[in-house]
Image: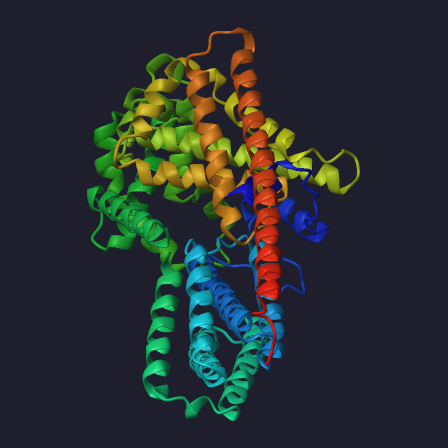
Length: 217
Length: 313
């Protein structure tokens, strides 16, 4: 709350991109659309599409945020390790989604503090099980996220592939990164953890629940 | 929140459907709402030319407008002639026109169906067309609110444009918020006497979702133009703070009798100052807390060193 209110009332530089504002003045009703030619998300045609896009972006943002916190938890316990490079990539993903959310005026999910805590606790507790535990957690989470991105890609392809070209490209790129992380986890003896099957399924169930909830709240 | 908005959409859909059911003309549901609308347009023409009584012309015109509508449907919509395009407006646009006209009569009749029927007559329609407005006075108030919000957004966008072009200095956030809230509340001044009635209408249970939606979009717009691009809990806290500010100032304005509502703007200034002070204090507390935590960590490490726990054997 403190940081929020403080930044609210200190000098706030106006760094909204000029092109967006020029476009927005053309039609006062379309203020929420970012109509730059090179923007990732196309301007929504109607409120239904806007709802759908916002929901998609909101849950993706929440997912990347959670993944970041999981890696942070793992790093807090294990110190600098192989997780570090994967965490760097996740940070890039998160900053990209932050950018997209700000540009399209998407509301972030209200459960962010919950994912903050839950992600950190999950990362830290699996790391306490050792390096294999951390890798197993990575495998489970990355598999869930890849599946989720795949279903989004499928949905976008079904509706209108040309319209969503840039967005599809972005999601595919992120999905490939997550699959890389998944494979890295498997390479580093994730499966040798005792109780691997149980842990993996529990984490994946939690991820599914988190995705379901973040889409709606 | 998404569920709330979906519920609103469903509610509005149901209202649309029920207004369709209320229209007595043709059989197919798609035609009937437009049939009713065409009938009212026809009424407008006939009342201007013949001065027939509303009911007789309505019943005779309903069949003819049905025929006219089917012929309209048959013709290619993309190449419709100019006259058809000019005559044709959606039901929502017609409602908006009536409600805008009705606002002039609010000081006289208050926020009520009388004002809406006076507005309908001013536009040239029969006062029976108020049957379109199932929510009655609530429709009028909500229409006014959304009109005020659009005006505010236009003003903020214009200001922003000025800043982008370098023709104006960017304001500090606190000043920006104060000006935005003041501009928005000043739009209520012509209706100030009847505003308590409007507020109580907005508090009716079936109006609350819609009025909350208008409030939240207004607050979101103000923060967007103030430069907020946050994507974490700050998004929520900032909007909550501004909502509180706005509501409190609106309530003060209701009871303000000073010239040009000077007391209200002073109140607004003071509240914004309070929030700023609180933010500064909170930031200081946070820094202090972090420093204390670091001090404790340092002390713990020192102790471990002294007791030899840190040594690796």
